[in-house]
Length: 478
Image (cartoon, rainbow, N blue to C red):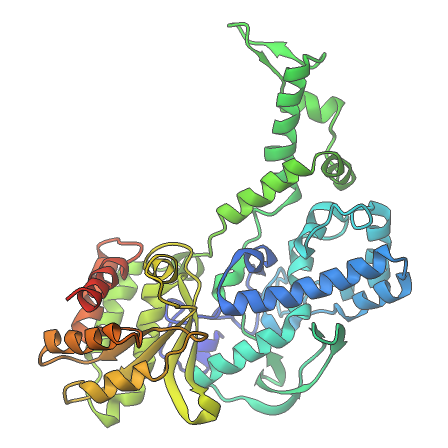
């Protein structure tokens, strides 16, 4: 049974930031460290720093000859059954390093020479160069190392969706990058059928079909060798009818470049620029899975559903909680994967103030990217205030949101409300705040959300883009 069904969230994968796992069977998805390595949102960067800390600590010990200490770091990479992702065919059971013997892995690392020679640059490179390591094991290693980040993410999502947690549950081991050692602690945990469950953000999972040794070998290594043999006019060169020279990949595989991870290690040591091209290609085309890929339903169907859902909520105090949750779901649907990781009622100023919702800005292009790159508006976080009022939103609400802004947190926020008696006057109030240098606020009424949902129905893959660009101009340039 999926989390959304088990806890009656009245929400689907399009509205949820985490993978809506079935706690009875693994989904064939993997936490992809290649995403963590390129994403610029706060959560991903923080998790990646921890991942790189573990990797660098291991590499430093290994290259310094402290083999016992290096080997001991692998002893904590056990089966992470808490995430319910991977390749198990029935109940989640994991297939991580602990199940295939950490000592065997360590011997493979020594044998490959990939770490010793510096060919391996990141944890995900183990998959390319180390025998016995594939996508499931890289994913499982990553989960173990960043487990505390995932637990804290799960705590926030449970708070957001009112999912009960259990206090003082053993966390399992995770890497403490400050102490550079493995630690464990007692945490508030989601527990289902007496088993801890950890959520994974959907923005950092994949089917792990791109960062593969086969892709590196076929697309980059062999194509480089084809050009190289033609340039040197070796015996492998053949000629087309028009006289142009060529070398087949088949001849390379059979005669000079048989596939193996050992061959890839040696080749990369001689041609690091080819490996750099491969990693740049991965980074330039790294895209999170779309909701339709994860759920199977179409955006059109979900957008129509969300319009009906929004229209069914009554204004006023009685409908405040329902409005808050529907607003989160709609923004998740509209913004993903550019804006992710919502946190509810984030505390600032030592708890003296609260922000209804805070998202991480993960955009690599589009409006939310232009905010800080072109418009010079700090926007590492996107603040959202939800007002389910029956009265007009006025200066106190505008001042309340602007009071949350700071240079470190960001100076961009969204003010959600049901309807405006005078939108022009509200936009002018936001403009006053902008001209005073107190940040950018975008007022968004129900009718505006419906406009964006209609664009999704029309097939717009970024249904928020035109609205926010236009409304920003209204606020900044009256």
